[in-house]
Image 1 (tube, helix red, strand yellow):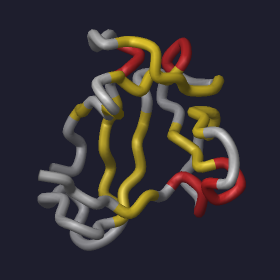
Image 2 (cartoon, one colour):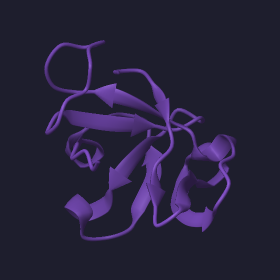
Image 3 (cartoon, one colour):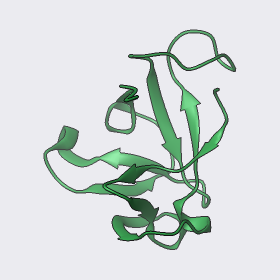
Length: 96
């Protein structure tokens, strides 16, 4: 659901927004901590509703920064933006 707190994992490692945001991200922990919690925010459809396949979403860190696909995904993933623009919006693809 829009506004839920989630973890993002890749190959068993949790995505961390260093210091809760304002810096880069890394995948170094196999156990979650507070800097690895993200709030998912729906950017398409009805706000506050269930998030569906292909919905556009953003991810807010515990320090109120947003994940950024730097250079439209051509560089590092960072958590440095305080506003949502083009590079802070992701298309959700659910794996089951």
